[in-house]
Length: 138
Length: 152
Image (tube, rainbow over all chains, first blue to last red; front, side):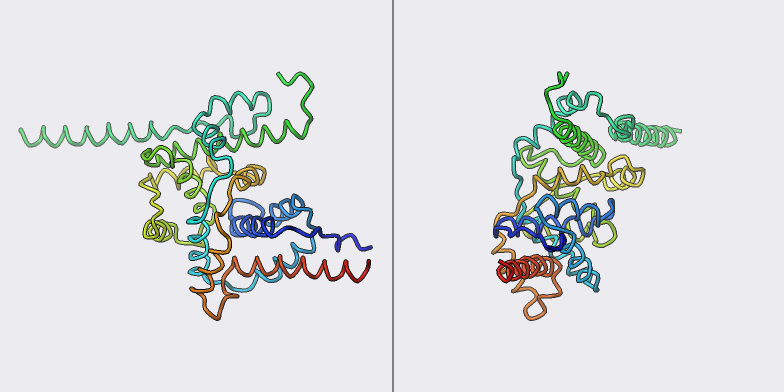
């Protein structure tokens, strides 16, 4: 038997789940789409045949408006599985950081605090205000 | 800390999910997304993150307006900081992190999605990317089923 024909039959719910995941990944401009979709398909016990079919047919032009309409529908209908868990993870980063331990990657060294940027903006705007009031007094 | 009891795969998954949480947290900080209502902040944050992953394929601000009209108000956020952080790769995620994130994402009713797509696209349903993906998956699986029946 040809290996590429060994797809596993999926339940309807899993098919829907796979559709949504492929849709989110196929237009993702941050990652290598085919690798991501191929990994997703393998998680659903699907082979690369489906990947070729997806790329073969999705390559044809789909307008920007249609993508926007579809993404809006998906996001409107979106719910979070294990919402509590993800909320806890994102809102409680100390726990996540603790989990990382020695498995840190490049991102760990990067520090970005937008609050500092905002403080800077506030300081600059207050300085500008002060200088304008001082000018007005003169 | 692991004591050698956790498998390598489990450790990788934990590391990936921790990375995802870390980057999402950074995204939350850079975007400075409205806190209130607190209960929906993470949900709104994930919506925003997914929208930004589409890049130039969509008009993000128009999508946000569309969502607001449909009753999903993301709230206000710092557009400039979000873009700068993404362009500097401070909040971009790798494949592993995306796979972990989309594992949490589910849709409430796919049937409802299909019915809304059919209403909107009418006879040109194949112009819908979701419908097309759905059909490809369906056809691919049915072909396999047909092939499997013939061979067994």
